[in-house]
Length: 281
Ligand code: PAF
Image 1 (cartoon, rainbow, N blue to C red):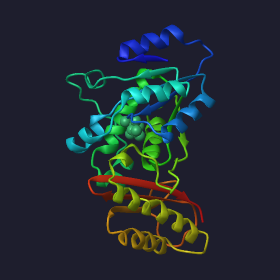
Image 2 (tube, rainbow, N blue to C red):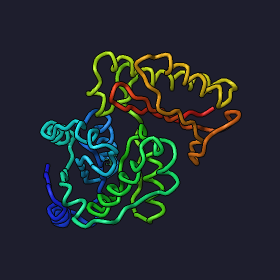
Image 3 (cartoon, rainbow, N blue to C red):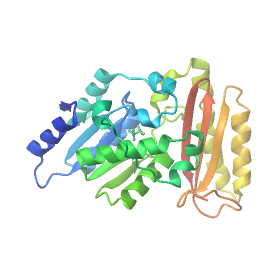
């Protein structure tokens, strides 16, 4: 596995090794890898002849410096995992390279970025699209892989790719969960034991919502069910329950007539967790 630490290094590496028939699958990550990331790599291996992963904790998508500083990191373990999974090349750039001095260009999906979780975390999705657009330009992949857990992020990136005509196919990969249902996330490691146990309420609420959706029901009944469950967990401080039509991400209302996406976020101590699920009637 080749490890590149600058844009010029990875560009030379791709230019030297890429054959005309090769396809590149990109797996962008912020490191501290878990099985959810490995599922992205697995899909990338299945789809592309060459897999490039990036490890970069992107400052522009963090609201508070404390959250950025607290983000867990373990580069040596990440490299072992990526090599074992058969990744060809890893890019670990530094911030001066990604955001050159005097940098003033941003990429933003103006509606999608500022709705739903974008309201709870202002500027977050602008930071994501800005860095992902740069990574796309650096690596020029044919395919790029993102987890469905970050459902809004996936929709935002798909919209950016469509609007800016990036010749890249975006592939969403299903959420990987712990045995009790908690969605895998690099943030989980920051949860003290009691919060870790309590955090399962998010996936339980989504499972109950999916059961309710199998009966004839309404969006407000689903909303009440979810709020009731999460509010009854004293360690959870509910930030948002957003129920949207999954094709448009517009707020859903009335009877459940077509697929919805339920997007939850809740604070457990100082750790913000999200979970999201698409549910069909
Ligand atoms: O999902 C993530 O880990 C990040 O938002 C991403 C896509 C790597 C951009 O920094």
